[in-house]
Image (cartoon, rainbow over all chains, first blue to last red; front, side, top):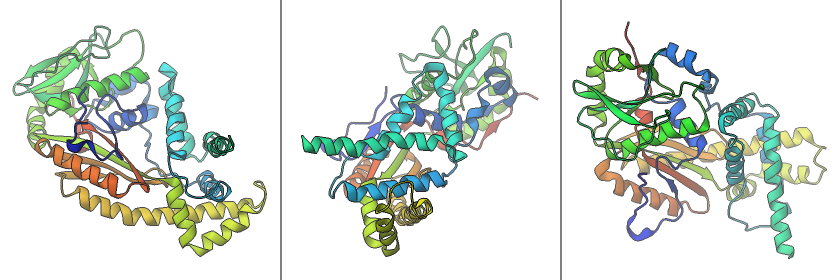
Length: 145
Length: 250
């Protein structure tokens, strides 16, 4: 696979890179389901039956659940001390999205359900909040040891 | 449909496909169907199941972007299926001029997608330190049990999200200014989550790919600890053919 990772000096370790073919499913879905040339709509619908997925994945989420998530993240800051950088919520959420889609054929539809759930401000968002909550506790435990 | 072909994309007729492509059909074969000066990158289609598995999606992207690594390809949106005879009669023949024109526009160019997301802790600390109203509300809320002060918590989150969006507006403007110095075209997308800063498709001259990579690295270093970047590519120019719908037949 073509991956443009050769960089002079080898510096700039801050930017995570992935070439075509090595992206995560979420990235792939974004690229190939709502972009690109479209041919014959009728063929697409009759043959495939996953038109559901063309629901715009880019609806901006501004639900109560989102607000609660950030309220909680804000509260967590003081509870667990200052100066902690490193990976946090975004990475975990990404990991969850990815692993939630591992179930072969059903994975795609699960992904879609999740998107729709987000868009409607449904309860899925709360479920996703459960896991990130664990992280600071793990960190706290490690510090005790 | 008796004899379907899966179409990955459209290329110039003199294209040589890279070795080792593996399609999503049972044979795995990927080949070219030429017509005049253009060609379709095609393969067979699974007939015993509907398309749309995780593997189908990833295979489509892999084939398209493997070709894009070497030459210009106009990517089809997943899934693109036509009858075998239709590849020439309905797709290539009626649209040859159009395809040639878009291929010429994109010749020697490749897409990258750059995503930037705030390091949540860093930015939330900034927000709390700089905004008195948020700080006061946060202190009030954090003193109470989680199920109390529900509306205050919603209000707190709402203020935090608004503060993030304000920051994004300022930061994204600066990022785009830098990126525009090395990209031929930029297609910005509205970020999805409040902590997302930038989600941009960038069209880059192949000759400038290295310079582009250096600019991205500099951004990564300059914003280190505050924004985390992810760079995808080189990719087919998905975001620069998006608005086109191809008529097939009559």
